[in-house]
Image 1 (tube, protein in one colour):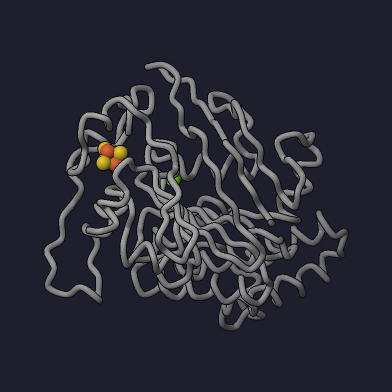
Image 2 (cartoon, rainbow, N blue to C red; image 1 turned 60 degrees about the vertical axis):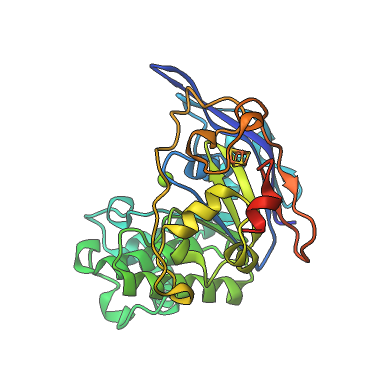
Length: 327
Ligand code: SF4
Ligand code: MG
């Protein structure tokens, strides 16, 4: 397994007390595989990614337990210097907002080239040639002419391609993309997603796609992990989850997005809001919003049950997953 996260816990100190942002997350992704992590904002998906990347080691956020095994090594036990080496060279991250991640006063080619100068000891000239090659790779037209341009001279979609190029530069084994297309319009979103999927295949990388938008990942992900209040509440191959969710929260998410295969269906938003993480409801954290909730849900935290009776490996943290699955 390329990446295996085991029982990860992350806490944040806030004015209102300790927020359990990540509360016992297990997940895994293999080489050549795409895992989508889906959840509303505040569900813990970005924090999980940051903990995996090792960019969360500063207060107020703190990893309080678990393991992050990357090619069998627990990254949480590495020294910061080793950690830095892994980051960038072996795993890379793509963020939502390319404009604030790129340096506005440096030509994109220099920013791309910097990766090779710093990590590979290349000359500026050789690094520039590498930058052009990378821009070609992510299909930026006229790369040779544009390599000297500044970030603001590119469209949002092209800037996101530059971010992808930057992440790809050292050919990492794993890329984590946090809402990589959220700032883009729908057509460009699809193109960027397609590009990511293609590069993932070409480089045989593991890809973790973090998103609040189920529609965006449907075509490119192999598996989905749905997060709610710092936990994974459902995990399944994407098509199985679409066909028949085994958790009421997932069902709620599916009912709230338009789908081509279910035309004429009424869209329904999930009532209520996700909980404040300093005061997560007892029992199942989703119970105040759940149409299937009953007494046991208010007292007993559901473990991630194995969903049986399907061919695929699936899990659901719902006491009544069978009922949910049967629709
Ligand atoms: Fe709903 Fe209960 Fe299942 Fe939680 S455990 S999702 S409250 S039915
Ligand atoms: Mg986020």
